[in-house]
Image 1 (cartoon, rainbow, N blue to C red):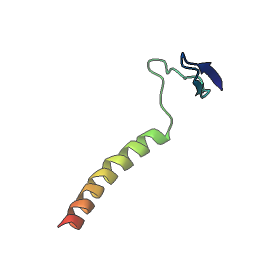
Image 2 (image 1 turned 180 degrees about the vertical axis):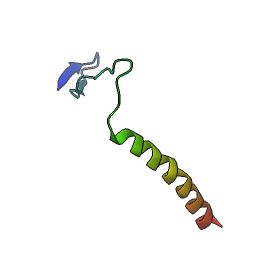
Image 3 (image 1 turned 90 degrees about the vertical axis):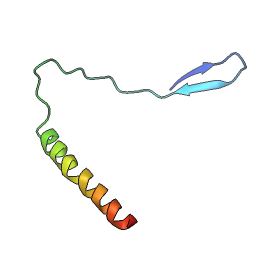
Length: 56
């Protein structure tokens, strides 16, 4: 962790984050990303309908 000291003497600790991976244009996503997107598109409306049904 990187630790810095503020003007008032307080210490701030910053987490070490992993490096970013930049996708090049035209690079395909993983095979599960399409399935995840479809599952989310189905699950969100179902949860909205369930919440509406419970609140009535």
